[in-house]
Image (cartoon, one colour):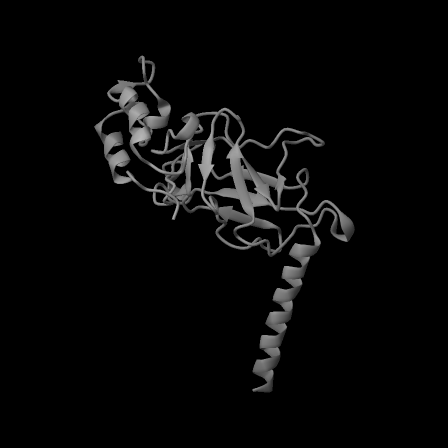
Length: 228
């Protein structure tokens, strides 16, 4: 029995070391890295967190976003940071004109960061809005991962297209609820295709460069969805 207890104590001690390391070392925006498992992702999202998973973002079943978080200050400078909680990450549009609306935890990691400071994201996003181009940035512990080489004020922009039935809201921006105000811009784009007048890429949820009945079906499925 004593041997079992000692092993449990050892495991707890190891977890405490990892947790304390995560709190003692802050993520460095220049040293940290991020990337995609495929060249370009297209993800349809909903404020209800019930649309397309990141793992299907490139027509596959194992796609993901990855990050490697490194420390930039103190006695752990340059070291990977293990044990960062799964909810200590945030995303945003690199182009400020491409508004996004986020729920409490829009992006959740698949696991704590490992001993190499690495984790991945392959689940769903709880968000609204549209990023048809320009990409997204990732923040960890309040620090936006920067483009290289550093120092660089520009965020590292990942080549991801995000679309949502939550297109419009107060002030013309997404409001994290799919309702009648979103149906208006969708109606303007309905029965159009890329290159035709009125086409809105933010209304093409199955990525076939058309806004038609199949996209309306997606819209209807998520109608009245909001952050839970």
